[in-house]
Length: 421
Image (cartoon, rainbow, N blue to C red; front, side, top):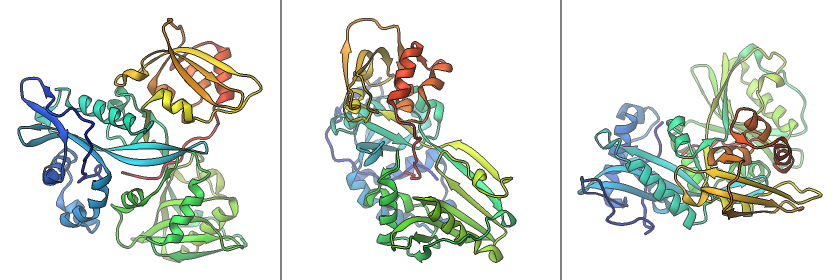
């Protein structure tokens, strides 16, 4: 499904009246009066038809109503040719948890330009302005679901999470195993579901902390018949859930989360209880652990694909909040970093890490032989790829002692991101 539509901006971070080339194009906020144009641009760029909308139970006017609360919170800017919207981006205000600490994050979406206005640098300017706006709002990190990984890599984003899609035949489903808790079906909009996710996200690296905006986006493109089952432990505390629907004898899993092995077992007991109704299970998981290893019959089909991309917006501010691992001694690294958009992230830096894991960054004038890009810095600090691996493939230029120091300083856990916006 295409990236999000109908967003409203009311901030004043853009340079109103900025003119590009000779076409008298102006960058300004995309207000509510341009909603129809905003939607038309995205539907053109992503070629979304009425039939596709109807297939998931949406009428266009219903989408407008559903998106309105989100529109009021979003930062949307665009290029206009006279009064015609020709290029646009949107940023959602979100929060994420990085190795136990909460960060303000800008969720980039709604990206599109009409083809006759391509190759004019419009999108580059919009992304630059969007990132500057994020920096002013204290959003030190940006997530996005990419329509083109190469394009966003050139702009400073990098892959930070994967999605594993799997298919399990009915005869491959795990056999029932005794657990102390039980599974109960609840409504998709229940507070119990939100509580279950909050508990899970509170100790899960990379997870989006879902407020009303994030939950609205999470459900937006799902069918009305989607169902939820929660696993409660013996104390009645929710320890996991499965979100699913059944269609054409297939059990589709949108997402399954669990805090421990017992919850995982209980949820799969629930799925397997549908044995007589289905002939296979198809689903997605967003952890770095393939499901096959956990099944007795491991010969299932699994496809691993990149999912979300991320980018550090303001390197210095990000490092101030970033939780490095404690050490018996202080650590230091001098390096040169490149960033294709944000000037504040370009140049030579000295990174200092205290014994208790607090980091600070300062710009220095000296030339450094060690080199890294903002893309590589992002994926390394997010834990998606380790320093040793990044050095081996030529993404970090430094000596072995520095790589060992980075390995000892960065927590080892890959991000979990199951959202879509």
